[in-house]
Amino acid sequence: MMEEIALIFTSYNISYIVAGLGMTLLIAVITLFGGTLFGTVLALLNTYGGKFGKIAAVIVEIFRNTPLLLWVFVAIAAVPLPSLLSRALVATVIFNAAIISEIIRGGLNAVPKGQIEAGRSQGFSFVQIMVYIILPQTFRRIIPTLTSQSITIIKDTSYLAQIGVAELMFVIKKLMSTANSFTGHSITAEDVFILFGTAAIIYFIINFSLSVAVRKMQKKIDITMK
Amino acid sequence: MNSGVFALWRWEALWNARTEFIDAFFVTVKVSVFALILALFLGVLFGLFSSGTNKILKGIARCYVEFFQNTPLVLQVLFMYYGLLYAGVDLSKEQIGVIGLGVYTGAYISEVVRTGITSIPYGQTEAALSQGFTHLQAMRYIILPQSVKIALPPLVNQMVALIKNTSVLAMIAGGDLMYRSNAWASNGTLSYGPAYLTCGILFFAICFPLTYFAKRYEQKLKNRANSSEREVGAK
Image (cartoon, rainbow over all chains, first blue to last red; front, side):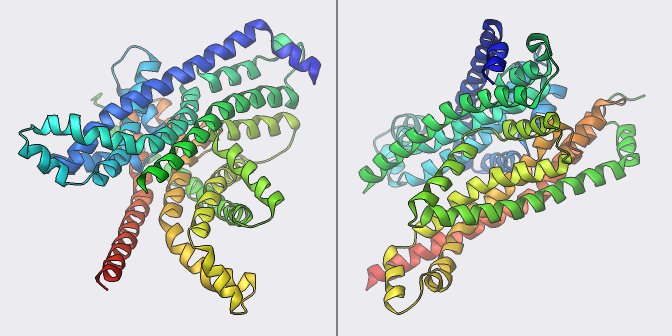
């Protein structure tokens, strides 16, 4: 086992894995922020948009009831952007915008309606009311849920291995399939175990830390809300 | 020939390949059903462990939930697929799908079950025990009937997640709907439009009724809770 580990973790392979991890985190961060931005727009439309609200609701339902991988494939085939990564990001951002918009909508509904009227009576415009009064409170409430969504986002980046984006899962698969070039023998179950075990540990450390943070935040909110 | 994404001849090609799609759809349904049975079994078992009093069982349930919730399903399935392949163990891709999805979703259902049980105040168990109920009877007649109501919407949402997650099988060429749609479209005619649209509609047709029901039911429970609060307040 130890010899095999030494054979697999050459400095070149380690830097390859680290680069894969970097790509995973980059995709996750862009997806989270892009998804939150468009998700906010969808949620506002859905809540205050009247006719447009119906359209937003339909968009949300479509994405909530179909798999992410389908949208990744669709984006690869249909989005006119130069790189695979940028096309895949369009899919992950829009897909998560739909999911996150439901989280934000829950937060929006929790802010008492009277505050909008209060803002109006003070001469605030709709945009000002949202930016200065409603959204800050909404986001404070949904930060824990948004953080647990970011765990899902990080896990879901691994679907992009299927289309050849060099994120962590892709890198591990690639190392496994070329393992004979640095171990000097054909691939064994042990190689699979070491490589996928390493990936599991990396994902676990990141996501477990986030889930611990979520639990702490929730406790704090439970206390302050009481 | 018309090269439009949704050109008529592409639909004809899809129609001619319909048995492939129907078979793939049934693979997805079959894997979903068996994975759901496994997930419910594991979920209820570990949910009971983690809401019980035995510290060791609680610890085991915690490890199970944390490990499977905090690593990607894709990793778990690929790990199992390649691990078994190189260890020379012969399991079909559908079996791998059932086990992978079942164990993964079981971790989520276990949390749903735990929340359902712990949301019923412990006083009710004590009251039942004081009336001569055994622990099992208290669970069966007092706690679980209430828990089920609370747990139903999130449970249905987990079901939807499971069905969508069957698409992970596409990553091991599992013959499921997602795999078949993509494979059929990439080979030869490049008729992505009809293939992906059909795939999307089929997923939507199964998942939407479920999410709709979950949303409605949750709203009903909420309204009932609000109105009973109001009644208490009025007195």
